[in-house]
Length: 303
Image (cartoon, rainbow, N blue to C red; front, side, top):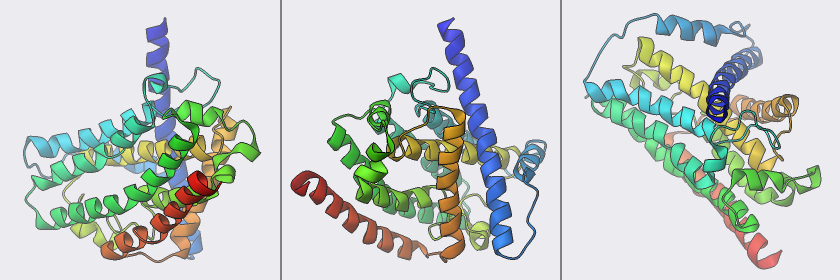
């Protein structure tokens, strides 16, 4: 019975993340289009496109690793979502939360980009390799502020458990975005970048598609990449809610908290122009890290 319940939880977590991600990115495309004075696609256009991609054949092949790359990326997204608790004080949508921790989650979050790099690296197409180089360079800039922010939380609570950090936030006044505001601000820089939003979206930006890491993926491979992106986006949204916004006790609370974060992401995308790769790294290694250092000094030497 326990194994059956665990399997059901795993399936529900993956399906819920997939459809929630599709819904949010449908809203993303509509809202951005309206901000630009366009009508925009239907809300569920992403699902329609995804189904169509899985029905198509691949256009090119460059050997075993080219086939395994999208699978590795999908595995990274799926395993990440399975170690992040959707709710507190609930047995549903918990996956392997009790067997994992925040350090494991940070490792799993980089599996996708590495799988992408391995697949594109064997293609021999210089434009794809250029896209991977931009992506990995940007990843270095994004990870540092993120590690600073979660490091502050782990040190403050003396735990690496997402569940324990979530349960310490028993009321609004104890949310980490209130008690650790600088760490939360630092994490938001990484959050926007991890979500693939402007100004940190040069890797997959529309003008860069022809010379990006996914230039040669098509058909089912592109369908897998779209699916894993939706699942991974929800994993990041839920993780930030757990770490900084007190977690969620039910589906309604989860939806409105993740939606607030998603609207924040959309607002940043609409307002700020896109950085170049070197500008992205330069910015991330200056502003967020400086704020992070100030937060460390405040939390462990002044507070």
